[in-house]
Image (cartoon, rainbow, N blue to C red; front, top):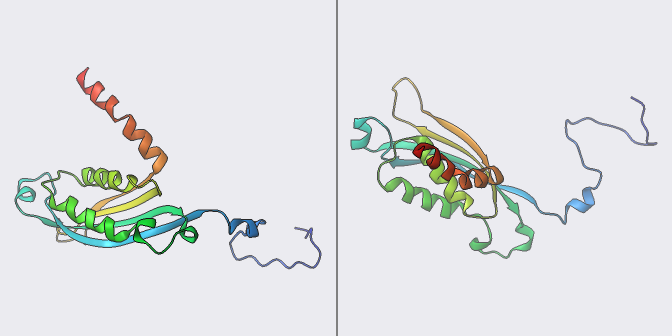
Amino acid sequence: MPNKFKNVSVISTGSWVPPNLKNLSNSEGIYQVQINELVLMASIGIHDHEKIKKQRVSISLSIKAVDNLHKVNESIRNVVSYEIIIKNLKKMCSKGHIELLETLSEKIFDMCFEDSRILSVWMKLEKLDVFQDTKSVGIEIVRERNDYIGKKKDSNSVAKLKKK
């Protein structure tokens, strides 16, 4: 491929650098808040023995948020706080019985998307003590704010379908 520019060497690093790099420094991007393998005791499961005894559940989240960090002062209220998220996860897992990991995931998405700065959430939920011959079993889900909010608005239509 011929080079269009004089005195330019091209080294491929597998990365693309935008031509307007100077303009990007003023724009908002995204940053990620990570919670890796938070292990909590939860009453979760469809089997009778799971309803009697709590079991270990591992929660991992990667939360993409609006990067306005260059505009905020050093206050926890100005960022998406992993401390507050963990506190809320602990409360959530201590309240009553949950039948499915999928139900727990919906509760976690609801909690996360209450914060308008959160753009998307990757979640991995694992039950750690179900089978002796596995480290864990579980689910992994990714939701984008726009898709999730739209689906929550349509959730009443499911109830209407069940009544028909």
